[in-house]
Length: 325
Ligand code: SAM
Image 1 (cartoon, protein in one colour):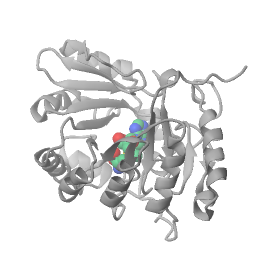
Image 2: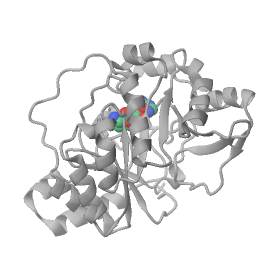
Image 3: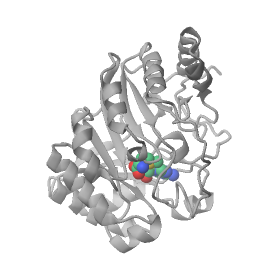
């Protein structure tokens, strides 16, 4: 059977990883004390990133989300963001961060043209947060407040829901959304293969945590929903808070997906579950513009409307931090 392409979307949503390093050790992403990163990891230079984006932009305009690993660990991130924002094909530059060092980056990022922020935090209890990730919750919240003070609007907070770990905090996060005036998105744990036992034990399907919240609150769907957006967003009628749900594995949205990913080393992926990706690095290092454009075009045409999970196929093992979450 010929693979189906997703419904055409006018814009590519590019997750652009600036580094695969992160200070946190989330148990489903970089579990345990990982081996040190190889010293000589070769990341694309700002110049090469811009060339890759321009090549993608020949097919469709691009919305960029800078990610990683932890993108704020990449030296010169503001310069990279500004450079990308100045490209003709780029419609928006956004950022996903753990916010640990956001307090010192918020203003420069805004000045560099970063327009939207997603902050990732899985627990609002400092002891838990530290025990699971090794990080300091206070620094994260300080980052969020600094960003808001600097002028970022519509900040989104991502919480990965884990059965028996933080599913007792669902209501706390709903209250957090109201108090902090942020959209909290509850994310289903994905099986990326790097923590398979953990996934088996702690997966809570999106329909279950959505039902728990519905037992307590009335949820009104938000208008103007982009079908390609991963989250289904709602307004809590009783409090006015905004929340969303993402269930990539059990409620996939592949048919409308416009997401593509570029790793920090230069691999272009048309799906998170794309096992190999296309290695753009040799052409980015050597120059060949036409060859690069051809490879990018061929790769983008290979985007299909399902991922190996829904196709019942083989699943690669990876961590989001490698590919760019
Ligand atoms: N360091 C940044 C951060 O913490 O948001 C950006 C990178 S992180 C890999 C991006 C997102 O991927 C985070 O919201 C994280 O929780 C999510 N993520 C990583 N592994 C995941 C998994 N197995 N299932 C669901 N979400 C995952």
